[in-house]
Length: 389
Image (cartoon, rainbow, N blue to C red; front, side, top):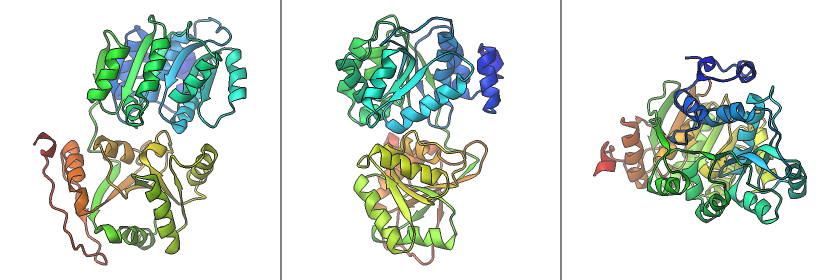
């Protein structure tokens, strides 16, 4: 199936061709026709599945009807959990809508609030924002929701994990009832379903199963004792002459500590996490994306929305929780037909997380050994039905 068969206009198809997008992904095939019919949807889809285009394209198609947005009004609202994702989504909007006469704006903590107010005063067709900054603008009467036609909650599970539920409820209360709503989430857990019940009356549910077997990504794990983990990572970088790696940790203090440990072994790295300013995070990410920085240590939350097409490998220095986050992380590599590697450093304390991840994948990760780092505390073989026990 081609994009042309999904009911999109020639100008949007031209923009997609410019971006070298040939065939729609599974989530796009399912979501776009439903959204063009005016249906509300709740969708479960991982990163790398094309979910951004699955809601941006039908919104652009329906907004391109010649109507003019009024001052301090918005026609479409896209809520995301992080600054980085807000920027990424708005970039997609500009790329896909480059031939349309529609305006868009991304606002979040760290942007110039007075400049944002001036732009909103003119009216904006599509606003991409984080919950906190949106409420700031609403309280200051910088925008109104009366003309809102489309509402998107992107990465709803991550928003709930970050404690945005009260802000989300305050926002939803302000929205008009005659809108079209979309919720996208990596998982449809109980918390997400409860939130969805407050947003939708009769939504169509779409579920794109996580793809544990990704042919473009070579996945393996190395068992390691916790006290030798940073030394093992340094060894892997040097012995294998790694050109680049995005290294995931769970806590922001762990990111700074690991950067310091790598530095002591002659490996230059930097970090992004919630404790760094937006300007710092943008500077570090741009250095990494352009290749000036080879090794980036990041927390999962900080890395949401960061995207590059040619990343060689990701490293799970800490195993993620919940297990679905593993799929999100490894999806940062092996994109756009490129080959990638995903390496996990696993200690005995990680056994439960490993079981849940391999149960989700429905296969065991290949285990590799490094002779220079014999393990004192062995990591048992996983129980593939662990999550059912």
